[in-house]
Image (tube, rainbow, N blue to C red; front, side, top):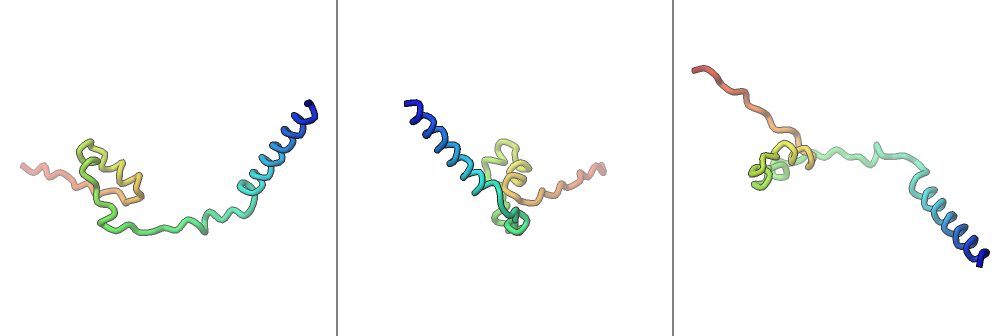
Length: 77
Protein backbone atom coordinates (compact mmCIF):
# COMPACT_ATOMS: atom_id res chain seq x y z
CA UNK A 1 0.00 0.00 0.00
CA UNK A 2 2.88 2.34 0.77
CA UNK A 3 4.36 1.78 -2.69
CA UNK A 4 1.06 2.77 -4.30
CA UNK A 5 1.02 6.05 -2.34
CA UNK A 6 4.59 6.79 -3.38
CA UNK A 7 3.77 6.00 -7.00
CA UNK A 8 0.67 8.21 -6.84
CA UNK A 9 2.61 11.12 -5.27
CA UNK A 10 5.42 10.74 -7.79
CA UNK A 11 3.04 10.70 -10.75
CA UNK A 12 1.25 13.85 -9.59
CA UNK A 13 4.58 15.58 -8.99
CA UNK A 14 5.65 14.77 -12.53
CA UNK A 15 2.33 15.99 -13.93
CA UNK A 16 2.62 19.25 -11.99
CA UNK A 17 6.21 19.81 -13.11
CA UNK A 18 5.21 19.08 -16.70
CA UNK A 19 2.42 21.64 -16.52
CA UNK A 20 4.80 24.25 -15.10
CA UNK A 21 7.31 23.52 -17.84
CA UNK A 22 4.68 23.89 -20.55
CA UNK A 23 2.90 26.98 -19.28
CA UNK A 24 5.51 28.91 -17.31
CA UNK A 25 8.77 28.48 -19.16
CA UNK A 26 9.42 29.40 -22.75
CA UNK A 27 9.58 32.47 -24.92
CA UNK A 28 7.96 35.47 -23.35
CA UNK A 29 6.38 37.17 -26.35
CA UNK A 30 3.80 39.19 -24.47
CA UNK A 31 4.83 42.32 -26.36
CA UNK A 32 4.06 40.64 -29.68
CA UNK A 33 0.68 39.38 -28.49
CA UNK A 34 -0.42 42.73 -27.11
CA UNK A 35 -2.06 44.52 -30.02
CA UNK A 36 -3.37 47.99 -29.40
CA UNK A 37 -6.73 48.37 -31.06
CA UNK A 38 -8.45 51.71 -31.30
CA UNK A 39 -11.98 51.57 -29.98
CA UNK A 40 -14.75 53.05 -32.07
CA UNK A 41 -17.14 55.63 -30.70
CA UNK A 42 -19.92 53.06 -30.74
CA UNK A 43 -17.86 50.58 -28.67
CA UNK A 44 -17.07 53.25 -26.08
CA UNK A 45 -20.62 54.50 -25.67
CA UNK A 46 -21.40 54.44 -21.96
CA UNK A 47 -24.44 52.24 -21.19
CA UNK A 48 -27.40 53.53 -19.20
CA UNK A 49 -26.72 51.32 -16.16
CA UNK A 50 -23.22 52.79 -15.75
CA UNK A 51 -24.63 56.30 -16.01
CA UNK A 52 -27.37 55.50 -13.51
CA UNK A 53 -24.89 54.47 -10.80
CA UNK A 54 -22.32 57.14 -11.65
CA UNK A 55 -19.63 54.78 -12.93
CA UNK A 56 -19.01 56.27 -16.34
CA UNK A 57 -15.26 56.68 -15.84
CA UNK A 58 -14.84 53.19 -14.35
CA UNK A 59 -16.74 51.64 -17.26
CA UNK A 60 -14.50 53.40 -19.79
CA UNK A 61 -11.36 52.32 -17.94
CA UNK A 62 -12.52 48.69 -17.62
CA UNK A 63 -13.42 48.44 -21.31
CA UNK A 64 -10.17 49.95 -22.60
CA UNK A 65 -11.68 53.19 -23.83
CA UNK A 66 -9.96 56.57 -23.58
CA UNK A 67 -11.11 58.73 -20.68
CA UNK A 68 -13.81 61.22 -21.47
CA UNK A 69 -12.95 64.86 -21.76
CA UNK A 70 -14.04 66.89 -18.78
CA UNK A 71 -15.42 70.22 -19.87
CA UNK A 72 -14.33 73.13 -17.68
CA UNK A 73 -17.15 74.93 -15.91
CA UNK A 74 -17.85 78.44 -17.07
CA UNK A 75 -18.18 80.54 -13.91
CA UNK A 76 -18.65 83.83 -15.72
CA UNK A 77 -21.80 85.25 -14.07
